[in-house]
Image (cartoon, rainbow, N blue to C red; front, side, top):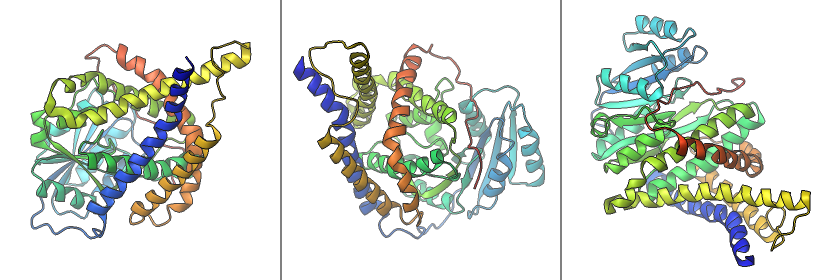
Length: 415
């Protein structure tokens, strides 16, 4: 019994440590091989035509700015299609006015809220291009982003999707500042590492581009998945399409600035991730899917870690409150001195590495990394708790139930 509890205790503290080193090493390899010295746009002889899809549901506060920004892209050939997903505010009228004013903008309207995946599928069906970019209705795309993405589709015929680099726009509150550092020091490093390993867990829902042929081959997006971005990534990779990560394709996004909004976002991510694990468990039956196995195992371990951590916390609390006697004495839910020191050092190393690989995209990122010291105390707690709630919802969810899209928390204010 003592040996078992010691193993569990070590797993809780050593698993995050191990993964941090994996992300650090993987991101450095990615930078050295694919980013170093590649600050200038690659030469493109002929630019392929793009359809830019903007699904929106009750986005009257942001949709105008998003489309106006898209009209200013530094790219010669593209169209913009805004899909109103049964909005009850002024979103439909705004995109109608923009489509009347700009020949480059087209609009589609769904009478009822069908969900983001359904809206994107409609957009794909009416799109004129063979290459499709999807972007959130609150996002602002960098003018050169489309050129960086187009290069991947031109050079790599097996590239079925390319995901960009979301950067936080609203940075006025503690929660937003923490997420600013998180997208750089955590999410960016993870995506780089996964790309080096060969398979990406998910494209970014805020900015992702697809080859139409690839979408057709997998039957487009499924409308019953809470996180359609994770699901479409796995569907493409299971059909042997490559998914690339392009950090120079930047997209500015709004993030939640309230605990309630953050909880809802991370709960959706957690539920969607487990839904994908449940749906694609058949990858173990096919040796050709072996490159997906490490990504699957890592996600399973992250779920196990969340349940293990909170089990230990609960047992410790019960022993302290009710003076219960267990076969072993449980330590408080804080890292042991040696583990805490190593975790702190690893965190600093991770921040330094993220500064190094991200410096070409944002020169002043260092001032936001100070706030990331709160990440272990706040985000580990919130994210692991959402796994506890989201996993049962995903496992008990009836297959085929439509995932209706609800607009997330877009932040309290813009800078």
